[in-house]
Image (cartoon, rainbow, N blue to C red; front, side, top):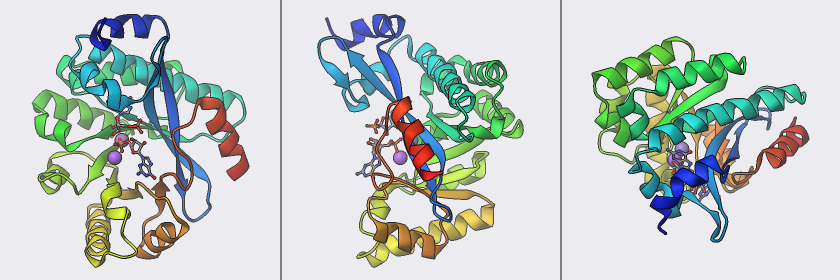
Length: 254
Ligand code: G
Ligand code: G
Ligand code: MN
Ligand code: NA
């Protein structure tokens, strides 16, 4: 059987799980958010990372359903953390193009926020350039509606695509995620540093928040912070963790 054939069973059998990568505020060192990242606990192949199944999943007829499950599951988890006394954090979820084609995004987000009594601003959708480019009027309208209701919208991998700038004007955004390819050599490569400065300046003039991805060292954090970036995500703070491990990390950094 191929992974494609197994996806339906995987969802029904609870083999799909979300891990959470911390997002940290430089000023306080506290965890202010987490990006939800999908994992597949496959019964025979072990824990699968998205690289092994994401393209299969995106093309699967159940992609929109799985996207809906991810929204529900992350909001459920957030409510559980709050019930355990943790400070509320922002949860960021990556979207599938199929959710937008199916027109299920706004309904799924509204239902989950209501069911788990979650503040819209604690929920963030991550949009890639590919999604931004494919967006038809109906998609733009639904993302505008969520944004107007207070849901955060982050532009993922910002700066890597050829239409990043055009997307700034078409899309309602809350935050830019500086792609980790610019962060990697920021301490040594003048051009990477200049690109990051330009992104920060642009974000400021558009009134957008910024988070730097791929922060692996104190030095990278220090220079990003000095440049005026306020938040970071990366292995320096932690990789994507199971819910209990993220909760423990939130407590140690609180
Ligand atoms: O860290 P990781 O190997 O999990 O992420 C690999 C890629 O898979 C990321 O770029 C991310 O955008 C994508 N991805 C991870 N989880 C999800 C998910 O739940 N939904 C979607 N649409 N993409 C995801
Ligand atoms: O949605 P996105 O493509 O940004 O998903 C995050 C991806 O980035 C995941 O594959 C995750 O494993 C990876 N990642 C997260 N933090 C770091 C980091 O600090 N360094 C590197 N090299 N990769 C990271
Ligand atoms: Mn992402
Ligand atoms: Na990214």
